[in-house]
Length: 180
Image (cartoon, rainbow, N blue to C red; front, side, top):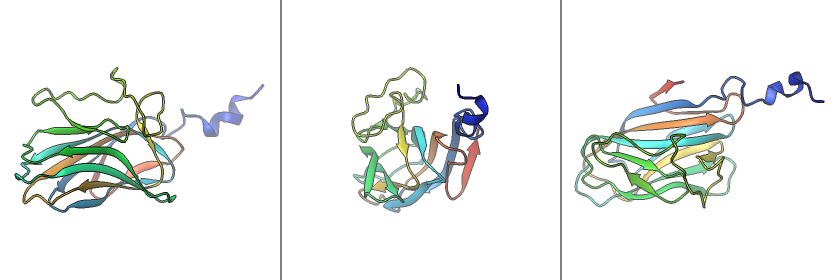
């Protein structure tokens, strides 16, 4: 029989294993590629939801948006969410990744509701590592916000809900606010 003491250091119930939230405000969408929009440190995490809320109107420039992981482990870029045109996006518009390496979707305007996490919305994962049908596992490295063009105007706030897979693993970056 395995004692509780022998498995406690690896238990998912230890500190840091609860889902956590992180946000980054005032991301200029006029920069093209925002390298390290967030970063994964000290081990793998499961991203349960990733959202971009438009806070300043985006100009009328065709501009596809993607989220890409640049793993410190090598292997090249891995698409987390791909592709949505954010041209003419208005303040309050909300975009979320389905976390299967394919779609980023614009939420229905005015509802304030977005499928994701554990609210009963089942993601069908085909191009990413699935954890019980929800989220995608990311290893240490940078997560970039990639834009196919540089709009003349536009800003957004990034919101991420995630769960560390090992003690002390986290998402962080410049000007982040944490909530647990």
